[in-house]
Amino acid sequence: DAKTTQPNSMESNEEEPVHLPCNHSTISGTDYIHWYRQLPSQGPEYVIHGLTSNVNNRMASLAIAEDRKSSTLILHRATLRDAAVYYCILRDSGGSNYKLTFGKGTLLTVNP
Amino acid sequence: DAGITQSPRHKVTETGTPVTLRCHQTENHRYMYWYRQDPGHGLRLIHYSYGVKDTDKGEVSDGYSVSRSKTEDFLLTLESATSSQTSVYFCAISGQGVWTEAFFGQGTRLTVV
Image (cartoon, rainbow over the protein chains, first blue to last red):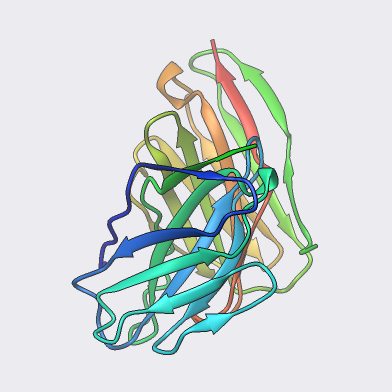
């Protein structure tokens, strides 16, 4: 499985934008980039996903590099409720293997 | 919210006893997953299922077995629980296609004493 690399932790201030990076230099052409987050004492929840183009939804934006070897999850105005562990994962649409594996993610701290 | 429930939510058991955790879904999703989460290790995949009676191993499958006799239920069994299996266990479901999102249960906290 293609792997991702994320910083262990990041810190932000409330109401400021947050850019969470993810490197996936071995990504294949059929890999989708997914982001999930896990709030304290909860199961992970889906945030956003994309293949090649930048994506926006009500929670966040996903910026994908032109070579697709990295991506950035953008929270436009961080709130205290955004404090969580953020996971960047790849899902391969080119095979029959539907494993869903996670790394350690990035722990985001939001300061009031 | 996606229809996925885990039971029990909390369990304390003794070393050497068998334990079964249940994941139940009402979404008719094909794929189901079991994870464990421990401090410093993130989410680690134990086993997953890609259909009724179709399962495969994940990263940390030793000491665990699974069964899926119907679409809605995915059972995780610890045949003889050990203290190293004390953890929080999460179940997840996903539809067909890797562009679909996965939904997670609320977790089961298992303590083996």
